[in-house]
Image 1 (tube, protein in one colour):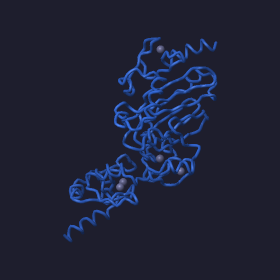
Image 2: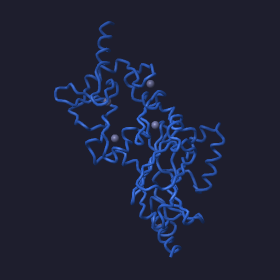
Image 3: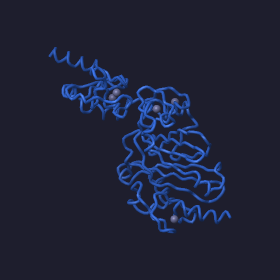
Image 4: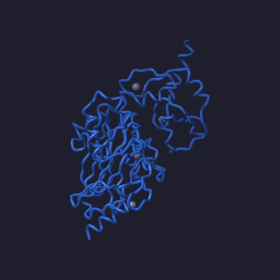
Length: 335
Ligand SMILES: [Zn+2]
Ligand SMILES: [Zn+2]
Ligand SMILES: [Zn+2]
Ligand SMILES: [Zn+2]
Ligand SMILES: [Zn+2]
């Protein structure tokens, strides 16, 4: 028994050389030729140092033990196989405040993010719908509370391109999609991107600084590998040149983001009736025909040019048409 305790203590004393946490999440990879530098599964996307091989021997031994959760105030001891999933869902999970780009360096317990934002970032918290105006060359990071869940929304606004992503703080992202609507005070046209996918928030993979190639946070994967920033794959790219053709004056654009729960999620959460009402209203407004259309990234046919396109825009009279046709039509109206 005493011997086993020694083995466990030895395992607990070995740390990941990147995140400095206990090596309790597989795969455990060897990073140095002499075998002294190891990285844990939490850092599997961090390619700062190439891996030499996987340490199966260590994993085979570790699977007989339980490990503590890395988050403060959580006293659970978790079996080897469940450490990763536990930490992902742990109520004590702490993240860097997503507003740290605004010089907030605080660490926040995930369930308390709304509270934190109310206190420190009042202008960045929205309820049910995010509604903001265009401010060029700015990154906007907001928290949107919808269906009693917290979502993190990033909007970057360049001169030609605007990039958006919505991430969920819980592993419920497959239950929701979001609708993005661009509107303008210039005319009655909307540019709408419906049923966009929501990803699960990962503070490393979603690092905006990495995207901007000026990240110096230790343990973040893209300090060195600049071309392959994972956040890129979550981004919805909006071509502002096209949007400009539709609205004329780009400075008058407004962004509107709404979270759309999928039907199954609503059925399982029937107790919250007010929330369903909002969803129904919203459904009417965007005229979602059936649940099939909730599938993300499904190609849609433009009724005007008959082409199959990913993005549709729709004009006030409810006719949904593609971006190309939208530009053509509005340029006729504007001319
Ligand atoms: Zn690690
Ligand atoms: Zn925990
Ligand atoms: Zn903060
Ligand atoms: Zn980064
Ligand atoms: Zn078309």
